[in-house]
Image (cartoon, rainbow, N blue to C red; front, side, top):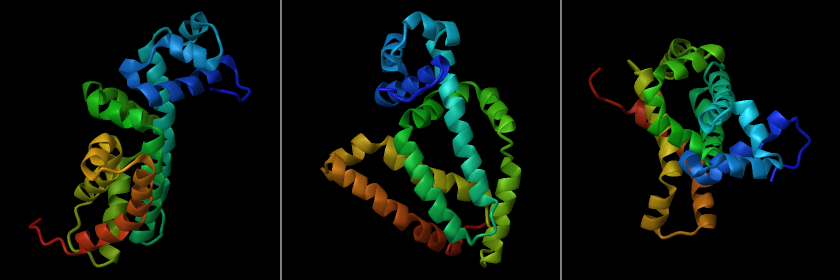
Amino acid sequence: MVNRKYSSEEKILEAAKEVFHKRGFDGARMQDIADAAGINKALVHYYFRNKENLFLAVFKDAFSKLTSRISIIFTSDKPMETKLEEFFEYHIGFVQKNAYIAWFILNGIYERPDYLKELMFQNKLLPEMILQQIRESLEREGVKNPDPFQFMANILSLSVFPVVARPLLQGLMKINNDDMELFYKSRVKYLPGFVMRAVKNDQLPK
């Protein structure tokens, strides 16, 4: 439940994050969100009109936090492996706490690409600049003809899939929730070195 002292709109957004995280977009109801916020359902409709508007507001807030952090990480002057350590620690933790965001992107944002572009513009996220920074960083570390787009696609996939596919992985590995959390922690430590070894040994034709 939401206990902190917020304005009504902030209470609704905080409650919506909890409900969407637990139930996803389809399973969440406006009444559930109103109950979690401790306010009248009519007030939820007053501020956001419908569930889609509320979800987009939640998504926008989470997306801005995610993209700003990714931009900071990959435009720094730190060695690439250090950047990867920071990225995987932050990104895997973010996806764990906001799994509904990943599902929203996978299941629906492709239908509204202009909305995603608008959010990137609002948050001053410049993919070209980040990709160029990645290319230059990899070249400084001896990687020949690096493909920054493939690099970014790979690290996002390595980070997101084990979280959104958690039920599948737990079923296959037959492990409980505590063991799964340990798996995520070990993955944060494992992935930076794995990625750097892979990219340095990539002999695919460019």
